[in-house]
Image 1 (tube, rainbow, N blue to C red):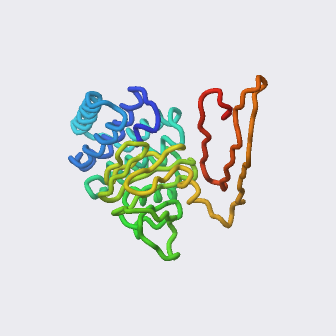
Image 2 (tube, rainbow, N blue to C red):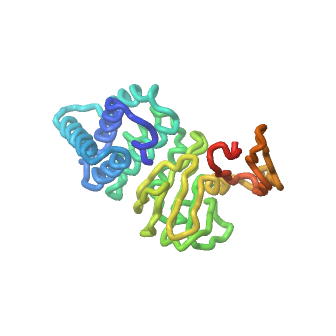
Image 3 (cartoon, helix red, strand yellow):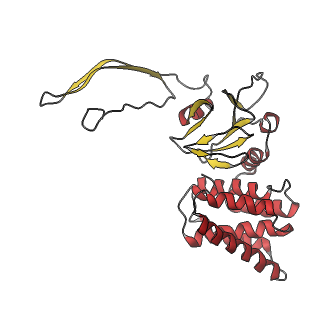
Length: 287
């Protein structure tokens, strides 16, 4: 999921967001790279017909703004954010800021004008400047050195010294890195692929530099050992600061009142921070 897939939107809400994107990118002219990045975000949740419809809306909005003399972009941004503030959750605002940064930087550069408008959105959405800098670092970074932050997880087949802040899961073969951002103040995660390695999040391909939300229950797969949501969450926890628990079940059984056996000699064990599931047919006693 990206900005537009982290929640269900009404047409009015989506159009308001596209107006914000149009105001930001038209400051220095909407580039093909920025339009392509926006197209990708819309394609995550809409069919191609609707994507084209909303891209046309975006282009028309950019043209409309170009025709207006003396347009006060700052006030337009504030008005739109004010109308959205009551409709959006904390997570949704973070998702919008991440994609807004991604679209603005799609051409390899964010101008002072774009940066000023994006910062207005940040301020209107009440996102702390320090937290926002971490979001930008996640969007821009393409190497471990550029991604060295305690709220970032890097997955690759390299070995690192302990002289870094990012968290690490060694897995491979991976050419480049899989990068996960933890946003503590909204308790959410986002993922991106940096490199040519085929990566699938919940069965959907994650292309190079593409950003998606990483909700509970998600998995990362490819030609490497699968990584689950619980693995990601556990990697951000300091083992010295958390109480380690383990659960062990031996020879568990259950018999229904009618004499039918639901469970027979079930045994398993696992440590805290791991996701487990017991599978069985309906009425077999798994509940």
